[in-house]
Structures are given as C-alpha cells and as structure tokens.
Image: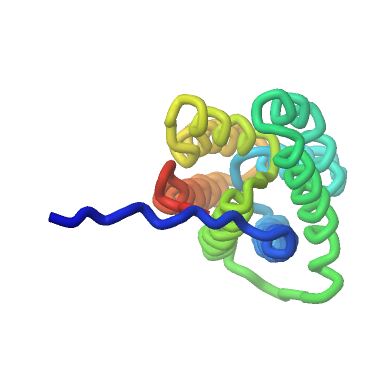
Amino acid sequence: MTTLSMPERIPHSQFEDLLALLIGTLVVSFGASLLKQAGALTGGMAGVAFLIHYATGIKFGYAFFLLNVPFYWLAFLRMGKVFVFKTFCAVALVSVFTELHPRFIDISHINPFYAAIFANAVMGLGFIVLFRHKASLGGINILALYLQERYNIRAGKVMMGVDVLIVLSSLFLVSLPLLAASICGAVVLNLIIAMNHRPNRYLA
C-alpha cells in the first residue's frame, strides 16, 4: 500500500513577494477608492480611517497610515521583522494608491450597495494575495493573523467579528441604507478570507 507524500514547500522569491505587494495593494486600494466615492464603509483599520475621513475631512490615506503605526511593535514582537517590513510597505502603498486612483479614473455615478459589495469582494482578494506572501495591512489584520498562527483561530472569523462592530459604530455618520450595505460588504470580505486563508491549506 502506497502513501502520498506531502509536496515540498517552495518559498516565494523576493521578486514574487514584491510583485504580490504591488498587485495586492493596488487591488485593495481600488476597492477603498470605490467605497470612498460611494460614501460606504468597510471593517478593520480601513473602516476606522473611513470614519475619521467622513467625520473630520482628513484624507483617508493619511488616517489609514497613522492608525497602523502602533501595531507594528506587536507585529515585530510576535511575527518578525520581515513581516513588519512587508506590512509597513503594504500599508504605505495602500495609503498612496487610494489617493492616486481618482487621478486616473473618474466614475460619475455608482450605486452605493453595489459599491459596498463589489469593493469589499475586491479587497478580500487583495488581502489573500498579501496574506499568502506573509504581509498584511496592519491593525486588525496583524491581530487576526497572530491569533490564527498562535491559537489556530481563523483570521477571517476574528476580522468578521471586529469588522461588524466597527461598521455598526458608524451609525451616526452614514445613512441606514449605506450602513446595511457596508455591513453586507464587510461580511463578503471576511467570508472570502475565511474560505481561502486557512492553516495548512496553502503550502508556499
């Protein structure tokens, strides 16, 4: 009786990591740009940055970058300097790309519900790219990845619970239809992560 051996784990090259950072952050930032144009929200640090943007007028990119700064120390202690470096680069790129997208594309009208669902789905795909190359977008992502690697708690479930709370906190800043659309979008994003980012499922 023969047994199947586990395939050899082949790590990503530095070029693959660089390409993944660029593609992943471009995708996530495009989704964030759609949300910003529609006035909708998402979860995580991006959701908090949107709340600050809507409440104060501070640019999303600035708020998103600064909110993530305190979490780098936790990432350094628990997940190593390479992870911190990749995450710092990813956060910086999303912050810049989100402000640059409107210079290259102008959407005259977008349905808020469609924007919330589609943008969060796109962002979920971007998160998967980043996670599989040992990077994140800081904040809640760092906490969720740490809990998954340390206690085998799925990152998607942690993020979904926190994200729903963040979106609910926006009750006084957005209309009820936008709030409902944002909650649906956050659920879609985290379902994508929960289905596609599990321990031992991805070998590279």
